[in-house]
Length: 198
Image 1 (cartoon, rainbow, N blue to C red):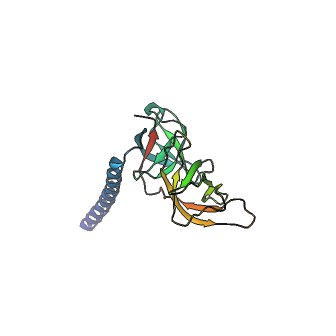
Image 2: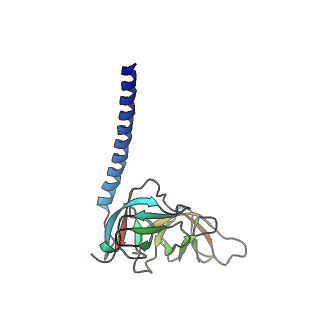
Image 3: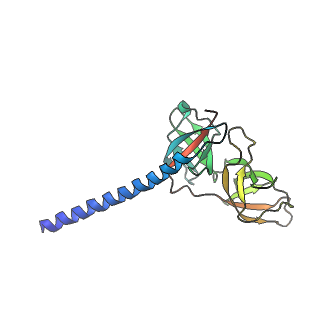
């Protein structure tokens, strides 16, 4: 009987160790991606660990970099793939709160790749992400890439924001209705904060 209990304890311990190893492998893969990321010209980056989600709607995260390392309010936050996920909303010496693209306070000048069409990327009233203020004659299709427009000196031009999910004209609407799919952040442990010149 004691042997059976000892075996069950061993199985539980090994299962936990295997789970921990899988998490370490995922973090290692993510860190390898981070190492390969090159900061946009004229900017530097700081790697940051995601510590927690800090908003009831899961639209903000807490990271482990603050103003002591050069982080400023409004700084762009990107994944290791260079995809923008949000902006620094508040900070202290060692930590920052990042408002994700899905946060109601986030509004980013954006454009459609390969075109001159620009608008404002923001959250809509249903919690999705839309690209506002695009003219009705804009030629936009699902799958088109949405990039930062570079109109804010804290956010470099041409960071990927997502892809067009829906682009349609709506009755009596003065602008094209464009819904954007952003990348989910749930599986990430690390991000980069883009800061001023190195």
